[in-house]
Length: 441
Ligand SMILES: C[S@@+](CC[C@H](N)C(=O)[O-])C[C@H]1O[C@@H](n2cnc3c(N)ncnc32)[C@H](O)[C@@H]1O
Image (cartoon, rainbow, N blue to C red; front, side, top):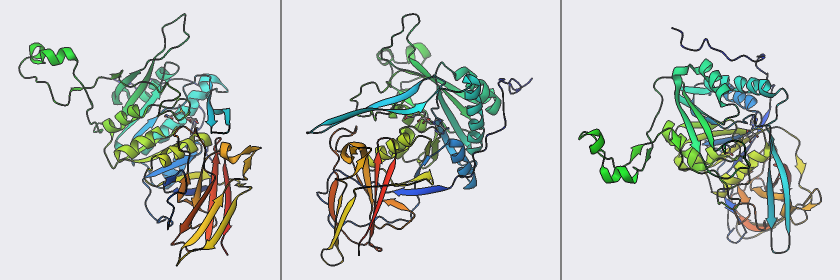
């Protein structure tokens, strides 16, 4: 009998695309968020040469995976979760509203496009050539979770059966959620499907539990199943349909980062805890707002998150900074740097080896918009060397969802600096970076 891998889906299959030679530049981020300069006395640059438990890669995931192969990551990843485009024929955008005491500003930003030139055929071609290297990156005990919905999940299942074999499908998880829809001629579409494939037979599984239903608690298990079965303290092992985690629906929900298609942290955390162990390495090659990275930070895993949208990259970076995550590295293709026009830095000797700095973005503008509205956050490299940027300190808004004012001037005393240069980077809401440097005489 065949193992099912002889059944194949047909579309116009081409050669694997070549990702080209990308030269990456690396920004090291040591999350130390501030909203004002109230207690910035005798601060010092962070220790630069450490191992980073997380890395954010901005670029096409093919190029990112190529870099990982070159660095020896083949067979090294314990868990891959992906939430790719679904062939939904939508262009996803989000609305940002910034308010402060004086004024406000609102705009719509287009984040990513799920329209495909040749429809399903080009979508499948895209996915196939990415699922192949993802399987190579997985370790022997590793698993991949692919998050999809009714548009395309059945087609991707056949591709995964071909790549992994139908026996390696461990679960088809159905995630059900609420919320309205305008449907009049069909049932409301309110579930996604997450396909779980394991690379080998000895995959990691840490059971997850749910509370017993009130009826079971009252009766106990024994009436139905006999005396051998007893209620367990931890509850019952979870089924493959999950109804206890809702979509992020409210615009004011604390978790809502104004990133369309953002998935709930509880959902990704459950997957991570079920199929990987603390200290392991997890990756998301369609990383969006950084939900997997966040879940890894909260549960002590190492992580890699990639996205080709600079908006996604900086939403994820901002999210991690805001919660004072462990240090992480940002990889981006070397590109043109925009000058941070209007940047002012003043330096003066203070006391002993302390220097006093005052850094101001007050006169910075982006396409006619004052920096206070255009920038989502900004960062300082306290011991800047040409050609690299180390984010030692980040100035963020007080409120989590970009609302409220951004401090555009800070003063601090600094010790332990070697070269006397301060680097400044500001990031706008479209993920563009503006850079300036100041060298104290
Ligand atoms: C459905 S969203 C992921 C949302 C994410 N799970 C979250 O919780 O925020 C899909 C993401 O895939 C990204 N993407 C699409 N094509 C890509 C590619 N070739 N390489 C890397 N990222 C890609 C998009 O920019 C988008 O952010």
